[in-house]
Length: 254
Image 1 (cartoon, rainbow, N blue to C red):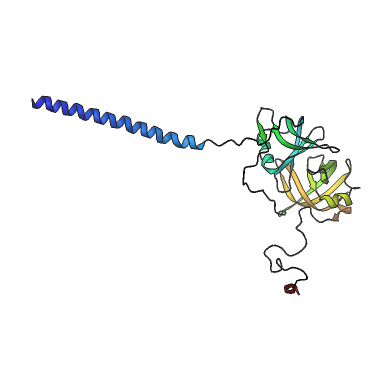
Image 2 (cartoon, helix red, strand yellow):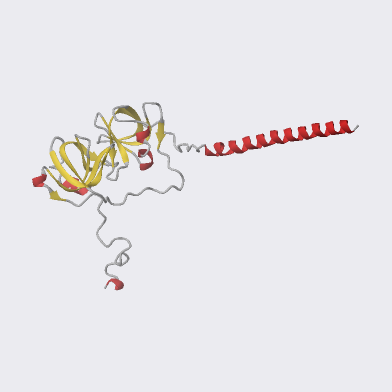
């Protein structure tokens, strides 16, 4: 009788141990699966239907960079300049490379070879769209601070902004020279396609290209003149300085 009781106890203990192992394994599997499910990024869908937008296709000649190195658009082989907001521009190098075909859904310029891009499709079918996350901060570039970068060569085309205004030039060697709208109008005779140009200013030069805010510019180094950089802060005291909050003409300013 004692033998049977001991055998029953051993059997019951074995069943309990096996059950606890199975439950523990299931709990561990559930626990390990939870982070993976949480890691899946949420896809933000476009608010507007972009299908009716005109589609522009062409070969990417180069990225259009800002003087701080961000991608602000594309230059196509036929001379079309494609512009987009920062959120879209930052993703462009991941879907298309120079020399590849690209398709852009966006508004075409009425009198300029420009496109305001709202969606871009690369050669491998990946598509990115201009979708701003609710409450996201708008990026802001502070004035360029860095080493001087020289640019010398022949002008390929005027550089436009998203509103179709000339803001600089694109060089044949793919360098970008920003001078700002005011300087571009004043120096229009020097900024014609086919003309030689010398410029120096702060900016970037790397794998994606060269882009500067010109501080000196001219047909050559001997004729170069000083210009106010395109990203120069407005006149007056700098933010944070003692005179920043002083209003000219007010009692406190006298």
